[in-house]
Image (tube, rainbow, N blue to C red; front, side, top):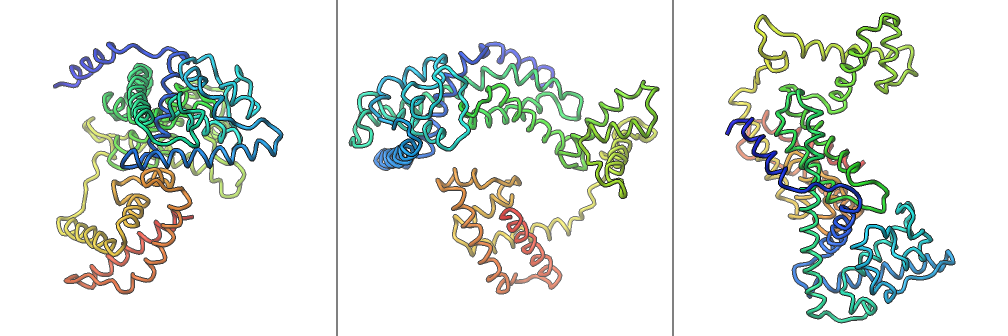
Length: 428
């Protein structure tokens, strides 16, 4: 299918979906997603294992929250007060804070829902944990026993979360398309921009928290633009430039267009204004680092814009990959050797190192992301990393790659040292 036909077909599919027009439409969706996300974070292999985790987390969270309430002289949280307020809050976007929770955290019911303190965040976590229980057992959520009604409600929460997430993403697609048009003509096809933006939109739907104070479209725009800009930086040119350099190049081109017809400013004054608007430091006058940065950006711009006698490709696209066939084979041996060396570690430690250093899929994951995958805290993942690092130092001297030349062994050891330094870098 040709590009134009594919775009037309895609736009027809998007046109069939009713867009989300405002807070009144997206708040019931994001609240159900937030509740379902909490359940997923506590879910185990079976209901018999999930229920005690949910109930135990609720018991600890309420206990900690009520201790802070008593210390601050505020009313404590009583689960029985939320029997009817959960459903009212989930369905009514006009209610920004449930009454029982507002009394505990000292927040107005109809005020702007922004939680900036740990106490307020604990209160909201208590509320969403109580929302995981059906209304008939919510008052006794701390002492009730697992039953079919709770199991059915867990399934309902998971189903509503999935449906709400789908509706939220599909209802925001038109907004995504408008953003994608802003980045056309930068070396990436329109559908590729939309695809990258879609990944950013999914990420926004999975991470959005209402009480942090942002509107969903503003929050989604940040992640959509980040994915698009990163894709442009990585995929639009053969020679990859850092994302911040690509952003500065874009700003530089725009600023030069603005100053193109300005005959009042002399070149030096114009460069000084460009330095300030690019956000470069002007403190170091001796080395003139800001000026050098602008010169480097201009050279990058000029090199990329310069063409040969035939007007086909930019300079960056004419660079040939000089990796020989033998080097590719040796690189494969290096990767295999590192993989075998990592087999010395337990599976969980091995996968954590691979994800943190980007060996798994080429993208380095944060401590928080890995913690969510394994159901562990950020601090626990950091401790596991430190443990692996210590074992690396102990085991590296024992490593030997059978059948390899001394040069290859040296390169393998260098690669392992690089891996170790990379792990030290993420630990720092």
